[in-house]
Length: 271
View 1 (cartoon, rainbow, N blue to C red):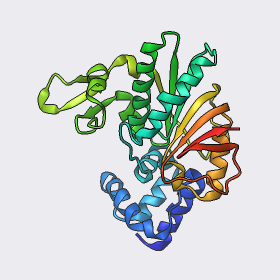
View 2: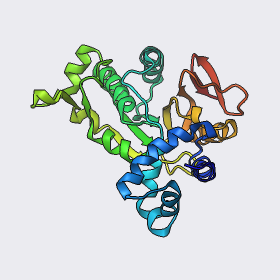
View 3: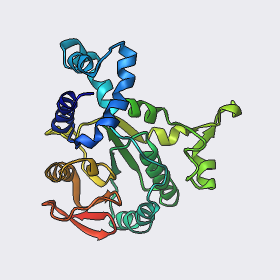
């Protein structure tokens, strides 16, 4: 891939998806897009670029290109201290406040579904103790491919290794074919989650409900600082006053003009 074609791709990715793509990521981009070239029978990245941004390619191939360039890394019960805080602080605070409406959660950048399913497990456990507690989860991602995987709720046994044994017994179904070593999230958890595609660079997100908490972890790290500020302010439009924002361990809001105050490591409250 020439620097000229890389610059064209990277300019589109940054302007339309918000993702930083400096020159040192050229090898990564080349490796990811090579699979699409082979699939389409194209010889050069310039041919591929011209096809993606042709009328037919924009319709048939653009989403495949977006899926290829986005990074999707997640795990069940990732950053467990966040879930400890949710169980010990956020949820008791919610039920003692006298709220009787549905508890709303947004997993923003849900990848293959490990995060929203983890949240659903934690909230379902809590609902067993507080029968008046009810919840719903919105899970969004830019990649259509990982959203399809997430909606199926099927994982290899290795993927669910971080899930506690008792939680596995309650919420995971083993494949009838034991040689496959696959598990599936039970229907009661899957029906709690609405998966939909969303681009953080859109001006409006089309979300009508106000969220009690938003998990946006290890997402804005890929954005420039001005884009981080813009996206976080858009997210905060959908977070109630006093609601919680959970961020990734390597992300910082220092210097950003956003209506959030830190109350614990990588946990913020909306002012």
